Every structure is written in structure tokens, then in C-alpha cells.
Image (cartoon, rainbow over all chains, first blue to last red; front, side):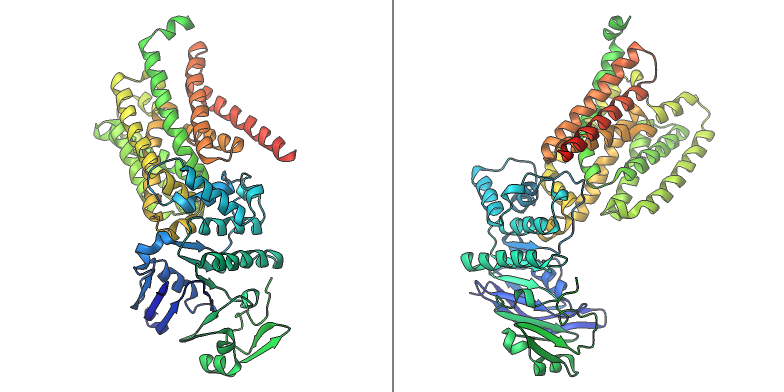
Length: 264
Length: 269
């Protein structure tokens, strides 16, 4: 059975139609990249999968149930946003919230949960700085801790919303490597929203490309072609492969950065 | 002389009332400091003053007026401000107006001006048995609330995006923390007065967070610092008849300065 099953989703804000009849399935162990320019509803799609936003029509099931009911089995890695330097919190505390932060009351961790916490910190290589003030860590170290927070509850599905934004190349590779290794070992599928396919190109199974008013899904080779994207955008677009990187030229939206590679 | 005073009933009441207020202030303080909501505390306390002044004019219980005023502002701020720091100017505008209205109420009030002075600067030595009981009840409500909401409140305070994704009701919790803060503020006003609420709600928690980053430990340390400041302040004001609020704020500030020095040294080495 598919972990995620989305059928006939549409999303409209007022008169603006973001997408219609969007359907896809996500199998165990799969990594799906969600690509597309700003304003095409990439983050909204994640919010629908988290049960925080209702689609205008259509339905989603996660692990056989509604997104809201499945929420405690979904790990989420948000955009990297730097923590306040003075915040009185350790990395260990942030990761722990992924285990029991949604439960009411105050309680100590059970021995089993303490063990899971230590393993999650170890899995992302954060053990050495787990007890340091989180605001003093680098952006990449903080993002590793967010990955650990998403993994610690051993979720059935991982969602990541631009997790590489404002990270340098070395840390981009660390974070993508962590997510890739995890889905291979545990079979947890990953939905990875990004504006730049290149950091994840080698590990992506399929791409969901959201263009203004239309969408396409398939392997990178199927979707990221000149014909495919030209059809999606309704205007001539060239897709080039340069030294193993995908470069898209001629999209109407010039802020659309994944054709440039790196904006930072 | 000092020892004689220690046997007095009103001194006992003052010490018990001070302890109650210190415990709630220190507890709530952790969340307020983490959410950078110091300014909101100030707004809530000043509008608590407006509520109290209105109560004086209307001839109803001052504490009721104060709690009413604080809760009203706490509710509005909680609804508006999921993040405290973004709302600076709107809080400033509201509190300045509220304070103006409070001044009007005070001028309309024909009774003793000491009532007003007590509100502004605190009046710990005149606490009655009944007031101690009231303080204890409100404190029990606040502490029960914090314990019941502890983990999601922590989550929503430090990592709102992550918390929302896990289904933690961040908006509802924002309202809840501001309502608990409003009750705490109404308590603290009775000990240190409107103008010095920050000395119990902010300073001890801020000092504690400089000394330890583990949330639960910092919270308890903040409570301990608030206790030392309040009880120490009350005792010192018995020995030398300067205002209690002065001593409380001095001890609290001294601990804060030391905590900053210690943490600065620690980050250097």
C-alpha cells in the first residue's frame, strides 16, 4: 500500500487556480522532489499533507488515514531559520520536542525515549554539540538538529520544505545525505520541496513539477525535458544538462532560480 | 527591633505573599523571556493599573479590576501577537492610551491617594489574610495551567514551525500564555507595583537563562532567584525602612548583572 495517496487534488485561492486534478502515490523508500517557481503552491502542498490546509477539492490519505490523524507519524524539516543567539535551549531539547512536544503536561522521558533521542542525535552527527546553546551553533548544525527532530519519532513519512536554503554546499550535501540514508535504511519516503533540483538530482526517484496552472510528475528524465517544461509553461523553455547538473533556461518567471544553480 | 518585627503577623503575611508571587513570576518568566515578550508584560501591568483605577472609581474590589484589566489586554495581545517582538508599536500605542485613561480614573476618584501609590509602587506589608488566600488561589491556577500545557507551550515558544507541523495549537497556546501572564502580572502588582512588575517577571528568568540553557533547570533557577529577591527585599525593608520594591528590584538586578558577567566569562573561555 502506498504511504501517501493523493487523488484529484485542487487548490484555489479565490479566483486563482494553483493546480487541478493533481494525483500521485508515494511508495515506501521513495524520494519525491517537488519543484517549481514561487507561488505555485509547493508549500501549500506540504501543508495539505500535514493536515494544516484543506485542499479545495480532492483527498489525501497518509498511511491509510487522514493527514491530521497521521500527523504524529510525519516528520517535518522546515526551512532553515536561524535561532536567536540568546535562546536558552539546547539542541537536545529541540530534538526531544519531536518525541513528546505535542503531548500535554510535563513528564520525564522514558528510558526507551532517551535512547531514541541519543540515537537520533548520533545519526545526524550532533552528539558533540547536543548540550550547547542552540543559538550559538552554525546554520548547518542547527539544520542537522532539525533533521534529528523530524527523525526521532521514527515517522512513516518525511516532509522537507526547502531544507537546504541558505546552507553552504558542504552542509547541503550533509543534509541531503542524511535524508537519503534514512529513507534507504528505514523505508520512510521523503517529500522534498526545493527550488533547485541539483543538490538532490542523484537521489530523486520522481519529480513533481508545479508550474503556474499546470503540473507534471515522473522521473527527472521524463519531466525535466525541453518539451515537457515548454508544454507546462506554455512557452519555449530549454533544459540543458551541464556537467551532471540540470539548467533550465527561458522560464517566464525570472526569479525562478533553479536554472541558475546557486543563488547564494 | 528587627527580631521583634519577625514575630509580627503582618510580616508573616508579607513573606508568604512574596513567596507565592515569586514562584509564579519566576515560572511564567521563562516563557516570557523566551518569547521576547517583556514589553507585553509592561503593557499588561499598566492596563492592570487602569482596571484597578476603574475599580476604585466604581467602588468595586481593586484586585478584581486589576485582574479584569490584565486579562483583557492579555487576551488581545495573545490573539494579535503570535510573536511578541513584531507588535512593538501596537502594544506601545495601546498601553499609552490605557495609562491615560487610568490617570483620568484616578483624578475622578475621591478617596485616599495612597491606594493609587500602592498600585504603582507595591504594598507588600499591608497584605491581609484574605489577600494571601486570593494570591494562593490565583497562583494555583497559573501553576496548574503551566504544568498542564508545559510541553506544547515549550514547543510553541521555541519552535513555532515545528510545533505547528506536529499539530500543536500554537494560536490557542499564545492566548493561553498571555492569559496566564495576565494573572501572574496581577499577582506581582500587589507585591512590587505596576511599575516594577518586570523586576519579578523578567529579570530573574533572564538571569537564570544566562546561567543555564536547560529549560526546566532555567525555569526552576528563575523561581529561586525571584524567591531570594522578594524575601530578601522584604527582610531588608524591615531592617531599613526604605521601600520594599527598591530592595526587591536591587537584588533581582544584582543577580542579573552577576549572571551576565558569569556567562560572558564562560563564553570567553
